Amino acid sequence: MMPLTFVKVGETGSIRKIGGQEESKRFLEGLGFVVGSPVTIISEIAGNLIVNIKDSRVAISREMANRIYV
Image (tube, rainbow, N blue to C red; front, side, top):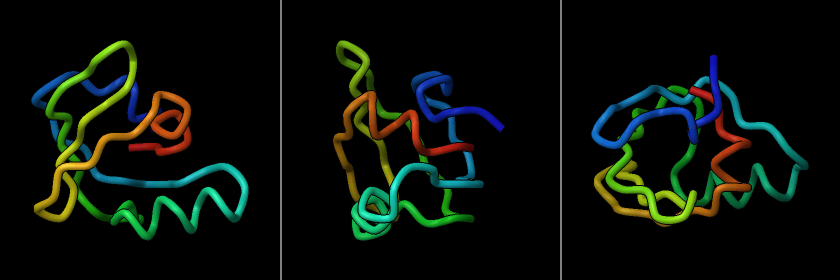
């Protein structure tokens, strides 16, 4: 298990855990980041990620990506 920031561009991982406070978890779940969902890294710009989750592209900060474990 590793943070989402360690996944390379073009690779897909399955979400195994979401860390952080309850408010952060709910925010990420609202964007589609739920345990068991596949997530693909589309691009990385200055540590921030653009990911494909549930047929949508979502931009998340490096801080948020470090709370998502694949």
